[in-house]
Length: 381
Image 1 (spheres, one colour):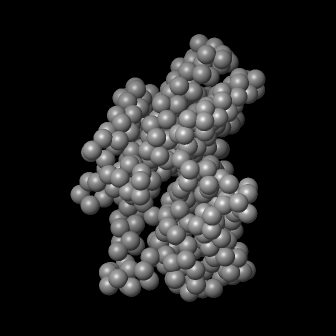
Image 2 (tube, one colour):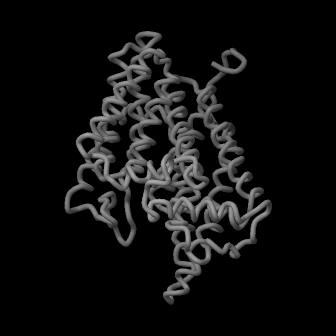
Image 3 (tube, helix red, strand yellow):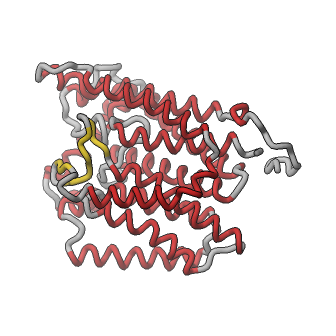
């Protein structure tokens, strides 16, 4: 059935005709911007140690090329088959999150989040985002087959599904990805029609858990200090303020049109930590100014618009919930990443989708976009 016009149509034998070109072009544009910004953020520091200045650029270009292949593969099969394998996909993600905490995982800067494979780092938490979306969509769509609204046990059932990977990720420790997983849960529940009072109870439960985590020491001191740096900067150490201050200087120095590509002072002198990953947006702001930063935000706005549009046009609840989960994932990552670079959000280590350096995140996001294209192409079948 055509959800827009409300008329019955014949099954479409060539769904490629309904590919969303706008969504695909936006993703390609963001990947292209990533290559420019990653090179600018890394070439000087690599030159300083006698390394290939294009090292990170070449790796990111490889990830981008693989990402486009992943997009096409994820869009090529009928997304409804994912419901059959949702349990296996979710279980595999949980197993990887457990294994990464064993000697098989690699610890970097006090966090054990990666597997080292052939010179590359595989981050299971990135894959867990997509697995959670598929599992939640399957769980909630099966419920909606039998009744029109979610009960409180249904809401807590979905919360349990999201809570397990969120807890495992939080213990790595990775607060940022835990927040993303929570946002996916809330986004899918809202679209699935969870009642306001049930969501309020869920929020109260979350608050109790946060207080318990604070009381038991599960929240690390550096994580607390990052929050205090935002709300009470006068009473934290200078080191806790350094990242935020340098990011704000970089953004502010760009002015209207920027200092010019490869000419950013903060960028070239490495004043901004992790500027090719967590703080990649500062490079755009410093070198391309307000115009460049707003252009990037507009690209993300279009990305979210297309994802929400696909959620509305999806043929079935499963497709709607998958698209809603993906939209929630992209939205929270964009908002928090940009927010922490301009000083309105605490620093959490959340990367900017398709723009920050990193293979696991780029490939996971590519799977998500492939699923969006898949749902859009098959909305009439």
